[in-house]
Length: 223
Ligand SMILES: [Zn+2]
Ligand SMILES: [Zn+2]
Image (cartoon, rainbow, N blue to C red):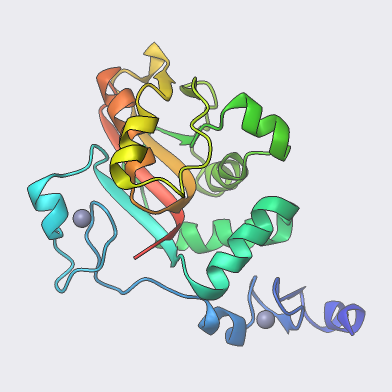
C-alpha cells in the first residue's frame, strides 16, 4: 500500500503513511496538540490578548522571545519521546517544518545554536536531537549554525524528577559560552520546554558573555 501511495502521491504522512502532500495528512495534522493562537511572546504560555503573561511581567526570563510548534501533551509527547530515542529522521524533518512555520518571516537572529548536550549524554544517546532540529532549521532559513558557541560543562542528569528550586540549583554552572557570542542575536533550539529553566540558565550564560538577544525556538512546550 505504501508503495502504491508513493506512486500516486509525492509523499506520505510521516505518522500513518497515507498519501498526502505535506509531512502529515490532514487527520494526523489535526490530531497534533497545538498551542492556543494567543501566547505570551516571551515564554509562549497562553494569554488572553497575546500580551506578556503575569510571570514575564513580574520576573521575565533572560531570553527575549520564544516560539513553539506544539503543546507537549498526548500524541506530540509520545512522538517526541519516540523520535528522541529511535532517531526517526523523517519525523524530525516534519517537526522542523512545523516549527519553521511558527517563526517570523525574517527572524531577528544572526546565528542558530542547539541546546548543548553534555558529551557523556551524547555518547549514551548517539545524537543530540536539538542539534538535528537546529541543523534543519538553519538550512530552511539560510541562517548560520554554530555548535561551538555554548557547551555543557556539567552533566546535570535527569531533571524531570527534581523540584523547581532543586533544578535551579542543579543547573548552576552547567553551561559555558564562547567569547564569540558578543553582540550576536542567537536562537537556541531545543526539543521541549517545560519550566523554561534550562533555556533561561543558558540565556543567562550567553548574555553574561555579551550576547545581544536570545530567542528560544522549541518544538513543544508544556502548559
Ligand atoms: Zn497521517
Ligand atoms: Zn510569559
